Length: 122
Image (tube, rainbow, N blue to C red; front, side, top):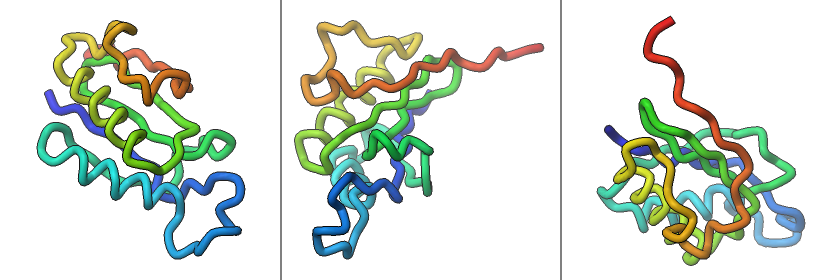
């Protein structure tokens, strides 16, 4: 089962317009996550996860597993490494749940939602 990191590439943190504005904060975080992930988990970019108040946002998902939305990240290497490590642990978990003691420090306090897997049948 493949674990995916879905990254909002349109996220803009407060104060974004005071920077160089060549890339959104989401694009910056996406590039860092993609470089960190290599082949360990899959990544994809989407335009808007509708979590603008907590930009930068990502979702960690896999078929038949719990899915998580995380937000309020600074687009930096530490955040990217923590997100990728959590996704790797998610991939190793049968249910998608990762024990708190194993969470990377960089993702603690960033969870927004948890979604149960969709039922296989009606």
